[in-house]
Length: 121
Image (cartoon, rainbow, N blue to C red; front, side, top):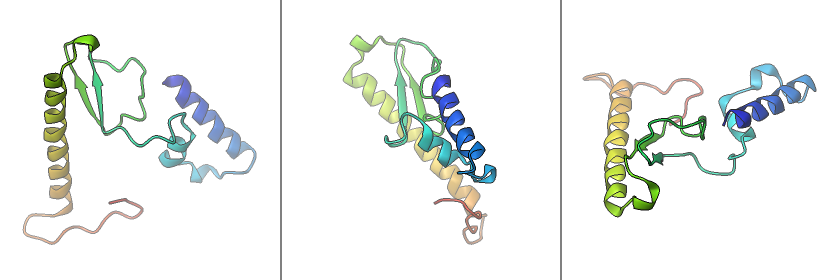
């Protein structure tokens, strides 16, 4: 939520102000670790029921890069078929994302590109 992001930002700003953290050391990883959900693993897919196509300030940072599945069904009526559709959507989007990353990393006819400095694999 926005409150969670503000709280994490205040925590990092306080560490910078006290000299415990250098401004250039502030990173998305540090911000993620300052969030309420830091102990949890990253969100791969978020399913939103009720036909709403917005997050309503819910897990804004954590869902970045994840698959958002919006279903036009109320939660009590969410069925195994709805879950299967969400999983299929996840598989298609995950595959498309991985395929695009692979194409960027491997130029046509050439060897894979070297990873960017500081990047992760």
